[in-house]
Length: 596
Image (cartoon, rainbow, N blue to C red; front, side, top):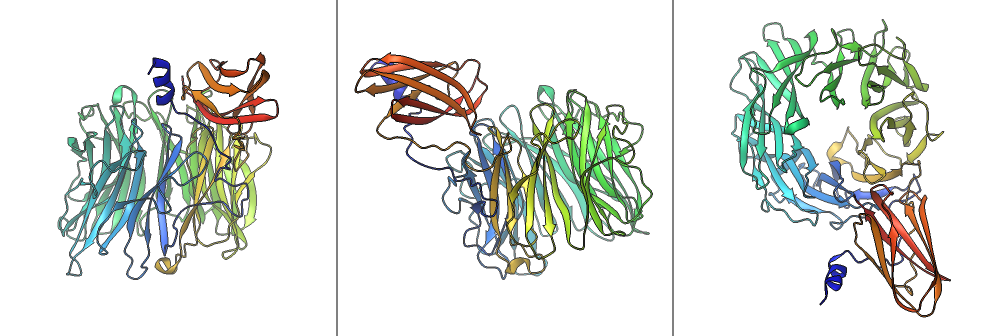
């Protein structure tokens, strides 16, 4: 067998049959991703740029009382098809007396995904429980590399449990996991929480470990990890100093930086933001972290100022966790109370070095809701004034409200805003997407309706861009009042860079005109092998996934018999495309990937 024949066989050979992608263009339908025949379901999803697929880690229960859950992993390909069967792969095959919560999933560089979750085993005594963190590594074909039950990452006992894993895939193809432990024996009035970081090799062995320091009246929680240059990692966690006599809290954010070998680069964690002293109910503390272009970070927080006003504040730190603003910057100046700004998103704009902040504002005095935005300059000033910019007008919360707001990246300086609008507590919930330029103006000239499915307590989550599209997913029919008696299913919808949803390009193929396409992925050219019954003119065109024609070619008087044509794609950006080749009234279509 000659070299050319071997190369053709080893290349991805595409002869596409007549088919339509799973994503649909009807917002009242959407695509069922998981939760078939289940009492309730909930999950986390991540996109994997290595195979342009999305991975959904979710747990479901088929026996709602008692609430025992099993954990599954589903793969959703670029066109919305479920690749791991109806239910996906069973990640945790534990007995009925096992339930799973606190899931996390992250892709790595060899097209595998790491999954982490906290598993609680119930024992005979009413208080005798052991909760520990488990992990597994799964290939893109659904093979669990760390055994059927995975590996146990954390220790655990009836007095010390572990929860809430957070994952970061590192440049050296390893993975860091952070989680909290709760020891119920170490304080006079309650549990003591701590944050532990561990780095595991690609084989699942421990590389290094770090525990955030704390005192006897302090506890740590809510860790996140963020990549930096040279394989360094910035870890940010929340820290509480507690006065057990008057039940007051002083809450703050702390940062520690690690090199690739796990060596802490600060003598002790640095305080990057502090919350006011709070007495009473636990303060609201939503935290978001966004990298800037100089290996530093913007930090966004939402917390209760003590007058039932939940405000958003922004702080910026450099690569050594030094704060760049004298004080955290409020996104808006007002003296009103009974305000809530817990749904917010942040997005760094590299060209202007500004931070875009958009939030849902709920006023419980006037019972109105709106969507507002602000830009924070690199010097810590409010670009759009003290009253911010209105994106969506006030509506009465007696009839409807905004929720589940998310900002995602689009190119260099544009953003995609995802949000939900509930029309009365029991009616339909509408999900939308809008593309914004750096000034906050609509790029599409419209707000795109993604879903108008009816249900209760639907949550909207959206992934970062994968292959020129975004994927949003929803938890449908989750009744918070009767959580374990409700039927939960997970639906999804895609949206392309031009604002269209659904299948994009129809992959209709005439089977009478077979052809072989290679190499795939292509670098600088695409080669097509086919056979003609008679001499003919060949027309070819390359289409993007959102239906735009990118390039055309024409070859006149191609001879009968076996032919091979080369199509130059050196100037075409990386991505997924559809190649259409026409021979008179016959045509053939193949999916191709271009990767430089």
